[in-house]
Image (cartoon, rainbow over all chains, first blue to last red):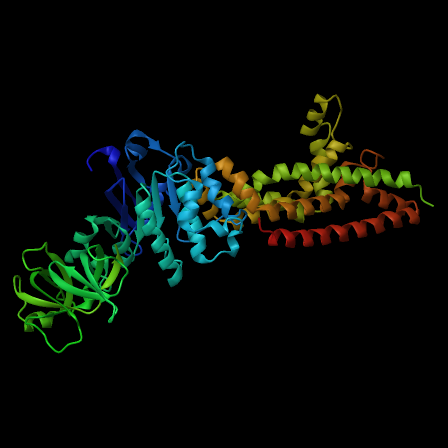
Length: 369
Length: 227
């Protein structure tokens, strides 16, 4: 990570829309790094500055190549930066066919050995039957797939994506998410992914940078960042939660469930088509976890995980307390769950650091392999 | 029976004048329209107002100033001296210059509107796809503004065909050089040659109708066209 050729190093400052922005972060030259934060936190501004579309003072090096360095007087115009930019709306050129759109950047890029060829990209994105169509006749999801292909074929060293799912309906979203997952496995190009949706970040990103009011307040791998209780103002109450990795034990065809092993304890989720022994990513939101101070019987919630309290953050101005629970039997690697309960419950149950608890998990969403 | 060769001369001159003027107008108007559409300069509306002046000014006022500018004492006379002539007034070149000024707003305005309608996004997309500003202008902005160019060209051509007062001021009535259609009609009426006036005036009506109809149909087709 420390070698300049292996990282993206960004630091931007400026005043945007009445607030001061000062954001610095690094990202590896592989995988997806999410720039996460509520609207107005400056994430799109930073992304635009990385592409050279907006002007912020600062510096940006991508794999050892300086794209902006105010100190050295370097500022590459957007068309000299090897970026692929995917906007919120697909923004296809209406005067060109799908093929014309896909080839627009490909014709202008200089590299001799493309990371992905035209046919390969078309197959990966499922665009074979659309090539001669005009962009107006495509659905929202199809357009965004073309936009992604167009960006990839311009042979970028870095993909920048600005909430590419936000303008889509639910079905197209699922379609594009699946596309991103295929790309993630197939492409050696790093991506910066701007989003205000924690579920999206949990599913796609390897690393995340949390932005709040024009500052980067945390950065690192997704799982440990999601466990942090102190980032609440930025991550938002409703969607806060953790991402965990579990192993598939077996499928139960009669109940249509998949049984998993999570840090040595059994967990069931609605059936997913993943083979036994494989690892899956799960997302568990803090608001979907209840706590009990002894084993609970006679309750419909099937997933009951034994653990102990490792952190409690109570906010006096709200009814809630955020807790972090470590589950595991001590032999397997531990997993950490977040649970949101009321402050009253914390007092009634006598919860404190080190207390044994049972976490009752109502909903577990499967987030992919 | 009117003499067809005599009638054809002003028609031919008018068509040549309108064609040359339209070509010059497209070359001159495009950068002005682009600048007016994209610049954030505070005084750009003042420039836009100057460009639009011919819409409001009486053709005689315009013609008066052009006469001074093109005459032996003005910059036009100085330019003419380079070519060995005394003045640009009462010449075909002078008529082209006058027509360009006179029809400028009719060409600049639709092209400017079309450029503005494109917005920033397609240009930004092109930039992130390695297209430099010049490349983007020709491969994205111009194709997307093609309706504006068509409208501007047709309006510029038709407006030049129909000008009268300004030409009377700077062109006079020299057969084959400055005697355009509208001047010829005026002349025929003055000399009570009604038959000739009827042929030319009727022809103008038919022409104007055909131009407007063609423009409406073409605009629709371009609007619908998909690659």
